[in-house]
Length: 319
Image (cartoon, rainbow, N blue to C red; front, side, top):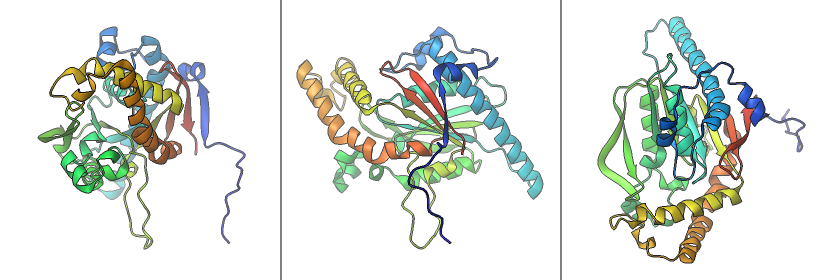
C-alpha cells in the first residue's frame, strides 16, 4: 500500500526559538572574540556586534561543538567495529543562502568561534565560488548571464573535492575565485589539509541533484555535510541589501580601473541604483526563487534575519 502525505500537515519539522530563547542556550560558553576580531570578521553590509555574537553565534557554536564531539566519537566507534585505524575525518558544515544575505560573515564568525574550542582547533573555510566555471567557459556555453545558477558550477570538481576531504586526504586543493576580477584565478588554490572542521559556504550547496530514473547513486553536495545552516530573510529586504552593497562597492572597489565592474563607477546615484536593481531582478532574485529558497527546508538550522541584518529567530530541525 502506498503512503500518501497529507495535504495539510499539523506539525512543523522545525522548533523555532525567539532571539531571547536562543540566547539562553549559550549557557556558560565563554566569549572568545574581542572587538578587534569583530572588525576583521564583519562584511561590507553586516557589522558584527558583541551582542549578536553572544546571543546568536555563541549558542550556535556550542551546539556545533557538541555535534563535532559526537561525530568524532561515532567515527572512533565505527572504526573499532570494523577493526580499522582510519584517520579522523573532518566535520563539514554547509552554509547556504542568497547573494547579499550575509553568508560569508556567518561563515567567518563560526570559523573563528569553532577554532577556539579545544576539541577541534583546526577549522578551514572555503566558498563554492571557486568552483564556478571560468568566464571563458561560461561565455562559450552562452550562460554568462546565469552565473551563480547551478549550471554555472563545475559540480563534478566540487563533489570530487568534498569526497577527497571527507576521505581524510592530505593537501586537497580548491580553486580560487576573485570577486575583483569576477573570475577564477588561474593556477591559484586553497589547500585543505585534514582540518577538524570544514565550513563550505555557497549559494546552491543544499540543492539536490536530479534523480536518475535507473536508481543509480548520484551524490549531492549536501551528502558530504554533517550539518547545514541557511541564512534567511525576506526577499525585498535582501534586495535592498544588495542594492546598498552595490552602491558602496561603486564608491570603493569599482573605482579601480582593473576591477571587472569598473564601468559602473562613473554612474550617477540614480543610474547605479537602477543598474543594481536590474541585476538583482534578472539574475539574483530569479536564482533565489528558482534554486536557493526551495532548499531552505533541507537545512538543519535556519537563521532568520530582520531588516537590521540581525537574527530575529532561529529554527532548529527536529525531524
